[in-house]
Length: 546
Image (cartoon, rainbow, N blue to C red; front, side, top):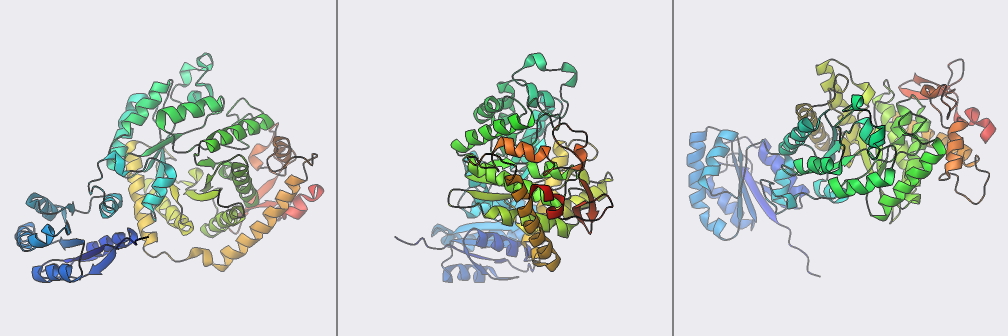
């Protein structure tokens, strides 16, 4: 088999220009795209640039100029005339500079690509991968989640919720977001009636229209929303899986919005949290059916249980256990690509170190399930309840949280807008939040220290794994039927919640869970404590089930 020749790019700052940061960043992207790179440095003459391209047998010659437009225009005209023979030999030409100089370069009509610093890195990568430098054609953006993850690596896909209380504003916002080309996945926020009563108009309450998101009431509404996203960077689209009629909704989502992936709960979105009509055991069965439905069709799948426990102040060990159970059930019901969602800053007060330890424990424990037919993709997000109200503080929190999340090298980064503590995000809010997120991501990818190597994080991680195995043993002991797998059996799983093996303080007076567990923040971690406020381990807390 013939080995494909590695392409070579030669790049430098032209003439008297000594500004090379842009050139260096361009070459870093080229390396990520598989190019051999040759950096000529600052203030390189036209003759030397062309000679280097010939000597290195370059496939691409990239030059930069960031000084005054008039001198730049004259220099680039000289360059174009001198390098014309090189271009005729098949060498591509690219220019990068300030917007005023780039405008002059564009008018020359000589360059295959002109970058002025406003283009997202996806456009630059697209050009380096042999696609359109302007990234305007739909075919240049992968239409499936895993394909798009691989295409964009090492940058994570960015996802954000969006849904306003009326269709017209939501349609306009989706188009605005898509054209901004800063978001890869639009997660439609739909109102509660759409989640619970889409196929039951008789149960819908007109007074609640738009409560919690956009009021979609027909399949055509979904098609229109998807159509609005067919521009810019052609983002993927997904939405809530609903709280009833799960399979009917799943079929419609595939048909109308080409759903990127569903998020299916295991224990939630039922009578326990007031989100749906099903009891605990029944909802688990129904959710497992939906997992099989998507698994049979090759869709990635997310199970969002861990953060639902965390948002109700469950201890970190239950967060880890629910994350493992989520991956375990996904694999058991035929999912090949599982998206592990990890919400940071939940409960509020969790330290960065203890967050990373918790997520690392979840991933390490779940990694035991991976094989050639089951892959885990990492998705992180900022805790919804952790945002401060003050705008500047919220912006700082978004950037800092995402920088911490990057220690896990997520494949998908679920951006939670900095305005969420005050109001549901508008299109402008989302674009701003994504720009902040992208800067944090770029900073991290440019040389972030290995936070996971911290001794305190490693110690906490190992302790959580040990404790989680005890909790899982207690769940297995709930089963009275040797012929079933306790970790997938709806009867056993519902019993684990009813008995308080899986419990959270916010579930007090809940008919499906005791809500008797007590937790408190200890050194940045959420721990189960006794009635005196002292930490208790799982062997003591669950002694009657072991």
